[in-house]
Length: 337
Ligand SMILES: *[C@@H]1O[C@H](CO)[C@@H](O)[C@H](O)[C@H]1NC(C)=O
Ligand SMILES: *[C@@H]1O[C@H](CO)[C@@H](O)[C@H](O)[C@H]1NC(C)=O
Ligand SMILES: *[C@@H]1O[C@H](CO)[C@@H](O)[C@H](O)[C@H]1NC(C)=O
Ligand SMILES: *[C@@H]1O[C@H](CO)[C@@H](O)[C@H](O)[C@H]1NC(C)=O
Ligand SMILES: *[C@@H]1O[C@H](CO)[C@@H](O)[C@H](O)[C@H]1NC(C)=O
Image (cartoon, rainbow, N blue to C red):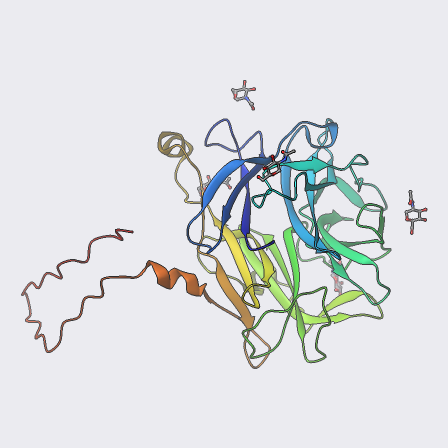
């Protein structure tokens, strides 16, 4: 959400409804319901993303400066992290983006790192030392990890000597997401603003075709996430959704002071059906997400804007429904808006 406009970026193949040639599709909205599709925002046109512009996250830096960090696949198909900034701030839709001259800003190097499993950086947050941090999904010595990187200027990144969190119960996490929540409070928190003492932190990760999460605390001294409960069997980890829902990201919506999570639903059609339809995959309705009052489970509800799709209420009183009888509710056709 930037200067009054919601932006949705998504993984898009401009060349067909199968996976491949991935660029960043882009749509804008003022209400999360009505969307204007735009041209691709990030295309595969530099060595550091020539084999794909994969998932990333946006961060608003001081002075209302917007930056996106995203994963690129380089000519050797190594996964690297790149930066783009809006090209023309007078364009409210932010159609065009400029790639940083020093891309890639993070190389897949360092002890234990698999250069082919290193992607999907989070939104940045500021630590007590005033430095920016991001977490990147990775395979570290065969274990799954949210690797921690620090920077003063969001351009020059240094890997911290320990991950934000890692687990030997799985071998790779995609789309990590890290945010703060207040138990029993459905308002959202901006991870880069002052976080109340009573807040908990959430680490979300995508694996095994589902989005899972842990609730815990962000220990500022050790600069690590410490889950309240550690379950060795990853099948028991809490899930964001028990249906078809993957690769979600959340953001703090400063317009309404809430946290919104948004995920991708693979429709599970066959490839030939996807080609016949002309698309593959949909985005689930964005949801407000918060923590229950016991601090144990995330709660969620479709954003209130979906109510604007409701109209023509049909109301019948005192109807007796007879067994085998038929009562047709008239006027309840699909939405006419
Ligand atoms: C589109 O797909 C065709 C066939 O797979 C391929 O030859 C071509 O390079 C692709 N174009 C782009 C822009 O990715
Ligand atoms: C910047 O965006 C504004 C608003 O859309 C437009 O009028 C202007 O021509 C753009 N400038 C450039 C250099 O593209
Ligand atoms: C990048 O940051 C590191 C760590 O703070 C510092 O040692 C190094 O000089 C910086 N490099 C550049 C090019 O600014
Ligand atoms: C996995 O990590 C836990 C600590 O988090 C440790 O107790 C356990 O021995 C490790 N298991 C393996 C197979 O390395
Ligand atoms: C989507 O689901 C189908 C069926 O389960 C699976 O074959 C396909 O690989 C999935 N597509 C992606 C991009 O994950």
